[in-house]
Image (cartoon, rainbow, N blue to C red; front, top):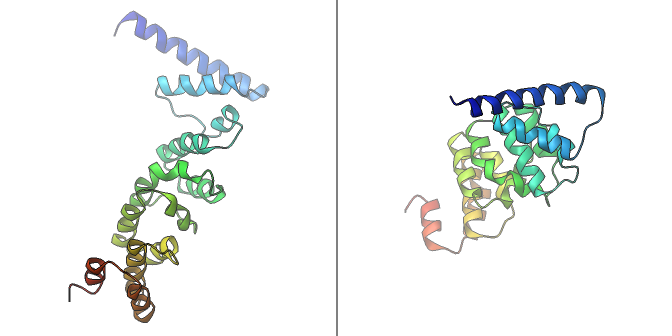
Length: 187
């Protein structure tokens, strides 16, 4: 390791240590918090995700992306669930990049699955949930949606829940013949 790289690591550790000391005594926000996050990332050190709130005081899609990435990396189900459940629909899309990972790793235990309808990978999320037997969650995402694929996932999930009549009623509204055939098992 070169002395320059080692010197940067030492400076980063000193900065983090000083920042944490001052943070306990004073309210450090804005640029100081953003600089600290940058140093934590460069030194590959985990940090308190609430530091992002101090860096970015305005909640936005970018805020959600940054804080979501931090929470997902730490893998705390309770914190992830609380964060997702607190998000308004306008800023929720910041979590979409993590949807598949969250559901694949069982990191969400809340009831706000319908928020994931906004995500472009919503069907991949649905496939994960179906493979885990979480049919009601899929219904929550797609129920009363009008796209054929949405109806397909709703019908399949309702059928798996033992609600055959309701499933068939939803499936009857599917216009795409291939999807209707797929739902009926290729008959």
